[in-house]
Picture 1 (tube, rainbow, N blue to C red):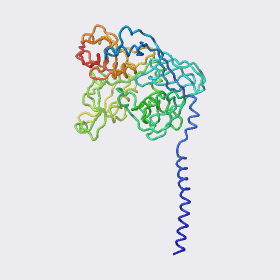
Picture 2 (cartoon, one colour; picture 1 turned 90 degrees about the vertical axis):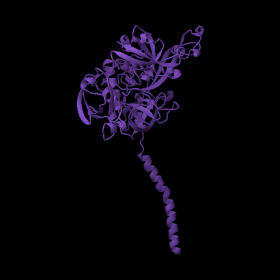
Picture 3 (cartoon, rainbow, N blue to C red; picture 1 turned 90 degrees about the horizontal axis):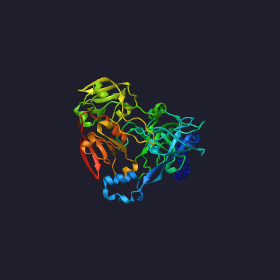
Picture 4 (tube, helix red, strand yellow; picture 1 turned 45 degrees about the vertical axis):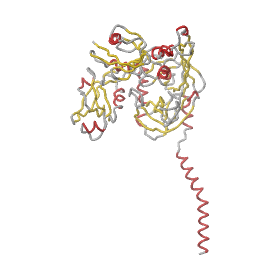
Length: 471
């Protein structure tokens, strides 16, 4: 027994000596399986740029911009400055963002929101050369902007196929968070096909990641492990304004489509069906005898729209568009928006328990053209509604706490007869939110020729609904 006890003790000591070596080998093995981004960063950093913008804004002695002062006068008169203090002056307002070079002759891309409204755009390369950029065009719906600098033989990125991106794969972002130039951050793809909460349009199906994206990263590239750009960092969800591990990137395939159109014609064309849709929930699926909830439920077909011409009816459920499955309604605008107007597409729909296929000639989405960053967008259908509107700046939206478009000028027409006034903020048109000029354009162009249309406004701090009579 004594010899057995000694043998057991010796084995125990040997095991204790081997355990640290075992765990060390496990740690080394796990470390070896983690990606090394050093080579990827070294290869692609020369194509990344820092973007600085300057915008001249009108301010009054109270420090508030002309737009903010007018908005406060309309929404909350007691907070407005007295007339004797309302003498205008201007001051520069700066901003920072990221971008990257896509061709050796000086074309580069960033986000629309990085350069919109800028009077001057300065691009700093990785080698510290500084250029003034020209705006070729911007597209608000995709949040993309194409810029040009006067330079040659520049390094550029390689694009990958965003359709091949898989949830869980490693990705790397390079940009200028908080103005800290050429900073790299890694993470994984958290989800695909995301619609950002709070956005009123679904023309981008975002890639969601947990990469630490912060202010200043906007417009920078998102790389896969092969060093290919598979996304453009655009937005974050945050309760603090900093990274909470929920960021969204524009898929590279979407970006390339937009950039190609901007470079060719300076405008972006998107497809339009002309239907009001919503998700198919459990109750709808049961009511329409579907095996499971999926597709886009057609609440309303717009008169004279491509959908109506193709034979789409209210209560149809769109299951596929050009053979692409529609699991949620947010996917349909994205798929349709990628198709050039005039293209014949295929719709698979469920109607009365049967699946039928309809060919549809895709129309053109109103308000999808690009605008110069220094020129205001003008809303369409000015003659029929009798008004022009302007965008509320991000600062104005933060101060007022509302999203909408501001009435700039009233002409003789339905808006004037309904009692609208210059300075009113339109937040809904025909029961649809209009947080931007593009959304106002979309809703306005889909209005019927005749009838009564509700329009919700905010005036002097109070919301009210008026009715436009179209005739």
